Length: 626
Image (cartoon, rainbow, N blue to C red; front, side):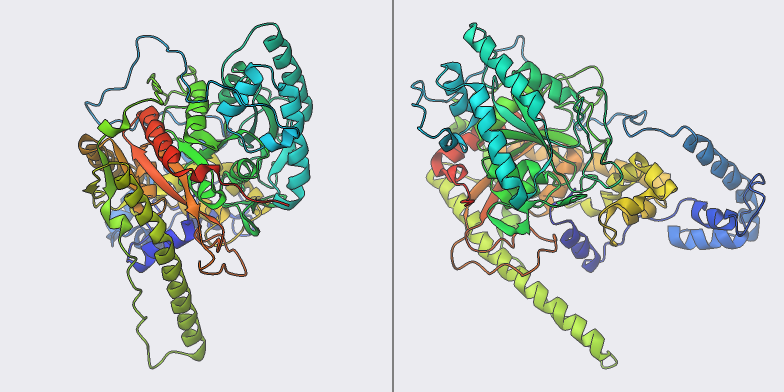
């Protein structure tokens, strides 16, 4: 779900930001009172006592209530409890969305619109290169490079598909990125593609290109596991909209890739997906397999998803290019729902141009996902990016603050002292890593200036973004309510304090009033962050930091770019990757940079990213797997 989620929540705690996940109902207390061992007659209304109301009020930060007030509340609380049960009897599937629709555009904003579709342009060289003696030498080629070879019939889609299938089989035992190979489907598609092209029908740059789907996208005839224990054999009878659109573009689906269970992290029911640059570490997540497989040259591109960092984080770890589209640009029909107001599907590729090629094929309304707007995607790789106003989030490039030693207590136990010293040591190491990686962030600014760009310093609006995170967990708890109520949440791989089972339970205590208030605060965030793009066209920022949370809440698009490799002098990685941070790769591992843009200006964002990649070439680096 998130980039460096645990570290972010820890930082919020240290900063005094209390969690707003507070009980607005007495359900839990009542449920305990109704357990068979406590109440043998389940037909009777639940017994709510004044003491229960007092307990719930303390947790909710309300009250104290008078005896008269509590007496007036009891009947309504009993009625509410009955309403909850009536709705639970509907057994709502994950695919049923709420009756509200989130749109991220501030009032008065205008969608980019085109009168008619335009031919898709490309910056691929007009002269198509010769095919290497060993077709596997094409494994790390871009979509545009492979498309030229397929279009001119210098290679077949079948040969390319077989090559990628062989690499997936070879490296899966090392990287654990495949949940299902779609081999039969892929070979049939590839043969059909070759027949079409031989007959003179060419659909465009994705025709015949092998790709992989994060396994939260439904594909008919194959399991759709969501990476989670208890869902290993789940399947659906219809392809997701994104899958249908890529089929229509002629792309060849070769695999369904891993994701952390229910889109959190890189641990799934079959193990942990690995980082091709350092297989001792996880790939991060939750688009774990998609990023790992692209980085390993085992597929030409993949589809990932992001709710709060699930494209950004694994692209950072694995050194690939990911485009998190504007919320409401790509339909999510047929994809697992985690948060109806934050989920986004997007491409993970080897270049910014490849991201544009894929997004061009998958964006736009499908008549089913009502959050999707009819905005145009006017990709122009030859756009004069020198005319753009480029800003940077100045404070995000500043040196990280030196952590202050914790106050000592004369009454502290030896164990408390040991824990304090351990925490201080971890903080020191984390600060050292951030300071080391900062040199790459600063080098990026210098490179942009060398490209002739006059960078404009700006700052994110000062808003309590962390206090809005419960919007996500509340929606996720609703999406997977049956897991909590049935006890099937124990089948999930991770069961810690910051994992989904506990998050879902805690979220049940989030009051409806506070959910609405957080959404009102989110409106302010949308207005104020959107105002930045009246001053600049593109924002440059480190991938980590407050912007990740802010822009996922506001629905702004982001493109994550490889920004070089750490040197031999980089801080050594820890012996154990606990999944808390994406900057622990150590010597020879990738770092990333992020560009942001206004709503639905994804094409402009990709075009500027293309210019940066042409000037740096970092996206052409790839790991040595053998």
